[in-house]
Image (cartoon, rainbow, N blue to C red; front, side, top):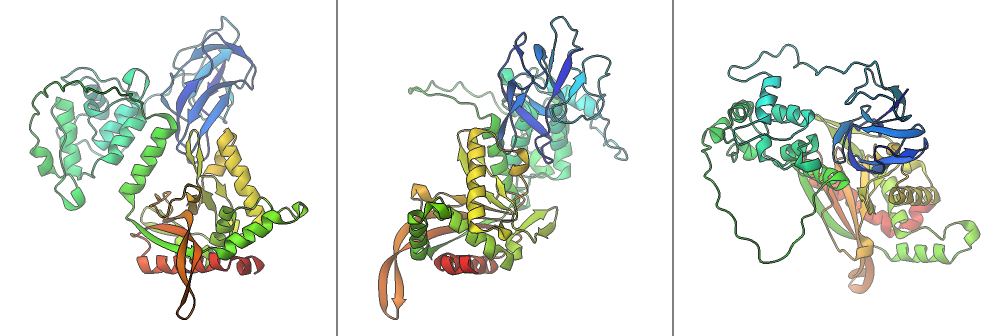
Length: 466
């Protein structure tokens, strides 16, 4: 009996994964631990093993598809075994489990939510999706999930470019368009749905509060004239599709900008003792185990001790509620060849300096070699992003939603400092850039946190001794 490989659940918050590439083709053989494909989530990239030994009988989704977790992606078994195409499991199964290939009926499409009457002039979801699939200008290739999401968000599929195989529009494309568009009133959404169903232009600029698109804005839309052919560009160029984890990162960054009132404060912390302590650690007895501690480790330690004093900084914004945490779970931004990842040092406020250093190093290495666990990539309450090794003096780090703040660590630069009344010296200072969600945290309390953190970095040896 053929075995069905399902899309594994990469953490509790991941609902779907994009198949980045297939490492096998139909007819290939391999063992149970043979990597068959690479999948991308909003946090990282992972290899998926076959789960069973045998021959690849059927690949259900091409590279680029956004596939819900626990749905079939490949069949493996003995040559000649029958595999129904497009089979869906009848109930969720554990990640990596094998399902029987035959005898399981397909899952019917979910009906619209009960209790919501259809609005006049708006076709039901199934009819709307069919109309969106074949507008007046020609058919639009889109996945069923993308069509459903486009209807819910009043997105015109005709205006989108697809990142799936052959330009096919997938759910991630619709989500990106929704994040990039101004918010709409409910009346504007209804009118856009009608226009999409009729094959009429639906784009509009927002004139409402905060750039919101209103019904009047949609009503002023006129049929656009045919655009003249653009002249050929004289220079050579290369187009690289934004897909996989790079596309997911872009969507996360856009969602952060669209849902937070980002506000950045910059300062510089005296770093003389920081550098001296780092130098002592490096030159010390290797048996003590402090030689690998970095400046970033010392900053992470200082952050973990200061955050409990300011719980409003160690928080999430969730559906109109601010949730503060008693434990500090530090997210550490790590640059990898696949894109940015943010592994989490859990309960950092209870770890010693050497433990924070060891954990940060292990997580960063796991991110770079692709072995990081999905569970290590979610649940952070505050994130630190360090660009100090590039010499950056200040920058605006993007909040890792649903967190309410993020710290950017910059390079160490010489700056004048008053060492006694009227006497100044040029001393090393570490640049710090703190971005907050001003909808949750005000500037003055954030400045207090940054002031205390700067003092902790200045006196890092004393804070370690506490």
